[in-house]
Length: 314
Image 1 (cartoon, one colour):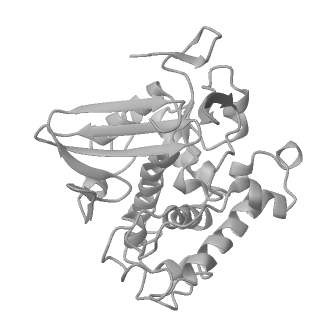
Image 2: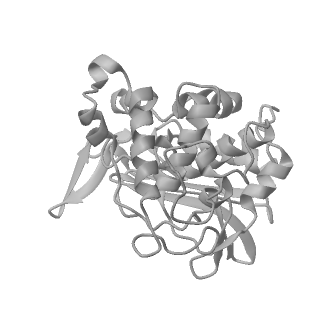
């Protein structure tokens, strides 16, 4: 079902190839990448974050593990975003000369340092909400650090490149990426709309409020590509083209409820589960300026739902 225009007043219709922002739906891709690395023996979900991100010394709390961050259970409250444009300006990086910032190693390294050190300064008296694994507290910084682990140890120069090579291309998701420049220039990409002073305003600034580490919310995709993505989960890790993206075991680990989330839900690894109409539905949503998104799937009747909207707050 397609409704509305990708750009108001132009008659340019939305179709299955129209690019939308995914915002925090990205976290499911980040978790998938980490699970791939665990299967490959590159890391263990029980490993401490400090083993891979030494800037996080873990000096003020019990050991924070990879598994804790995958479930937003590291003990950290949500913090104001450290955004792409802010760090790029500090490093004097410009996409006209340095290329798309989603692939910039210097930007990611500095972002990783800033995020890790900020979390490392949190204490029980000022900033921590409990011991690791005790409570869920939705924190972009944790998934940012997970994507930095993928960048540093996944065998690719950037998190964005890892997703391209190990997740997206193997599923033939050819219009999905973390890029900032590409959707701004693509003719079939949705304009981003948000209300400013009561007026619905559109723009193509995909940097707007974008977190400096891509794993928290940088993905863009299309309806057709996300059908392939959710079919892979319904097929227990096997893509529609027959390629194994993840093992059946790892998919089950992702959707397994690990910590209470909301009124009746549980959060697993990059996906949360709630009972809807008598079915266990595994899902994730996302929100950014000009982006509202949600993916959901259930094994109880082998179906999936995808919602993509280029308007804030839907």
